[in-house]
Length: 493
Image 1 (spheres, rainbow, N blue to C red):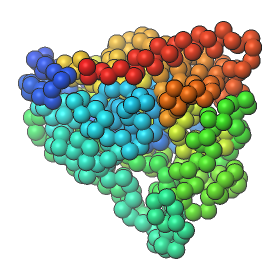
Image 2 (image 1 turned 180 degrees about the horizontal axis):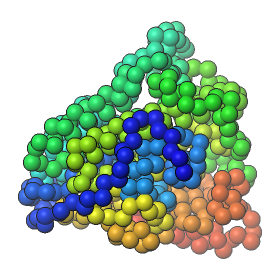
Image 3 (image 1 turned 90 degrees about the vertical axis):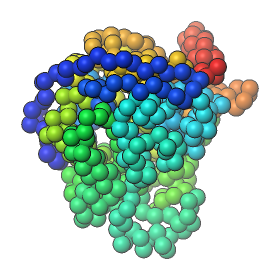
C-alpha cells in the first residue's frame, strides 16, 4: 500500500541489532526515593513520546481517515498493541499514573488537577528512576500535566510547554473581544495560519529534541528523553499546509451522534455539556448537538492537528536514525486517553466509552519483534515495568502493571484478557466481548451499563437491563468488584 508522506520518511528500516552489555541493576526500595546508580556503558536509551487526546483511528489501526505516515511506519518497525487502554480518561490523572506505575482510584489520580508528587509522594517517578540510574533525564513539552510536578528529577527540561507560542493575529483579536469562559476569554477552536512547522511550541519541542539528540550522540551516557506533544488537544491549531491535506467537504461526521439507548443519565452527564469545548471556545452552543458545519470544522481540525504531530514525530525519528542512535534506543509512543469526535453527541474525553479510553500504543525496541500486532490487553500502568525490564533496572515493588517484554519477544503472547479503567463515578472492566461500567458516588450506587462489543462495537445500546443478560451482568459485576478492591489498595504499604 502506498504511504502518503507529510515530511521526510526514513528510507530503510534499521535491521542492526544493538549489542547489549549486561550490567548490574539498581536495587530500588519502594519506600525510599534513593536508587543506586548502575554502570551506564551501552545501556538502552528510551525515547518516550506522549501525544495528548490521540485516538487510534489511523491507518496502522485499520482506518484511513487521517494521514499519519510516520506513525504508521513506526508501527511497522515494532509492535502495535491493538487492545491498549488508558486507566483514566483525563490528562492529569493519566499522566501521573503512567509516570508512577500506580493505578488511578477514587482516592488518587482522579482528575486533571492531579499531581503525582501529592497523590503518591513516596512513589519513584520514571524520570527520577532513570536519572538516579545514570541516565540523562530529559523533558520537552507536556509530560506531567503540571510542569513543576517532579520537576527536580529532570536533568533537562523546557518547563513543559502546553502548545501555543505563535498566535494568529485574527485569533488574538477574536479572543480579546470574546465572551468570558471558564478560563478567561474564549478563543477560536480551530486555527490554521500560513506558518512553518516551528511556529507553535510542538514544533519547538521537536527542534529541541533534534538538537539534543545531536549532543547526546557524542556523550557516553544513556538517555531517557520524554517528548510531550500537545496536538491534537484543543484548540486545533496547526500550520495551514496540514489543514489543506484534507478536503473539507468530504469530512465524514459521526453516524451515531445520539445518546446510547437505555444508558443511565450518569453515563452521559459528564459529556452532556462537553464542558471543555463549550466553556472555553467561541461559536460553540451551550447545549445540544453542534451544527454539521461546526462538527465538520472540529473533525477537520483534529485530523490536521494529528497530521502536524505526525510530521514532527517523523522528524525526530529521522534524526534518531541519521545519528545512528536508533540501534540502541527503544521508542515508545502512547496517548494519555482517546477523544470523541461527535460520537453519541460527545466531544473531548471524560468517559468510560471506547472513544475515550482506547489508545494507540507502539513500542519499537532493538532485538525485539517488528511489524507485528499484539492482541494482549494492555494498560498504561504496564509501561513502567516494561521500561524497567528493557533497561535492566530493577522495578519498584509497588508497581501495579505487568512488563510487556514477553509480548515484544512473542507478539502472540496474551498477558491480560481484560483491563480496568475509570472516570469520576464510573469504573469499567473491558475484555474482547463486553464493556461493563458501574457508577458510584461514595457508597451510593448510580447505575450500570453493558455493551456487546461484537454486535455493538460503537456502544449504541446498553443491554444491562435486558432480563436475559442478568447472568452476564452478574459475571462482570463480580469481575469489577475484584478489580475495585485491588485498585483501592494502597500499593505503597
